[in-house]
Length: 275
Image (cartoon, rainbow, N blue to C red; front, side, top):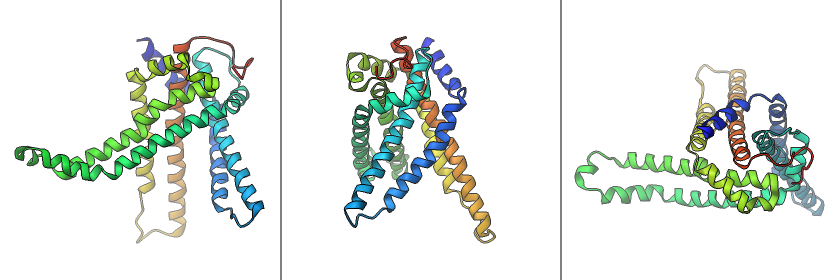
């Protein structure tokens, strides 16, 4: 029951600090614009190569500072500490090397899922061929292919992030020391919490499935105008962005506060941002 109350408090507590939401709302589009600008930069000479490196380094630092500080802030809230957003940002930047290691592990696991997805149709066909005749009459190939698609989705957006996010939390707060015994204890207790996984499932459906459905909506092209199409696109982008942000903020809150409660109070992050 205690863990249920932690998750409930984490969900409702997400919406209490408007400053954290304001930072996320403003900085995310800026980081997206920086990334798009980086893609458009040429590499025709040494100066442009240096500029490419400078822009992508700025982008990475911004992502680490923004999302690492969000996890740090929620971690401090879980421990009942007085947390400053600025101190959370400094701590995330200080531990950026450990955060990037977690990001590389996440990327590697995602690539493995991508490789597995290339064989999902083949595996579905093979699995159906092994079924007895009376089962094949009721289980179509399309059903098995759809089941494998949902399995790949669950691995990519629920299982892999769910296993790595507690490590991200420890990396943002404690650097490489977060990968030690204490960090493993927090990871084990977090991933064994069924409510934690339920929140991740809801967040994935809201932040991934719902946003994809909204962005795939199209109007009646026979009667639409460029103005209405532009307005529709902007509206769908805004709604999708808000839904995705809500899903991410709730996820950060649950990961951070659950991890903070499992560890218990320690030093105040506002006094020791590098701990």
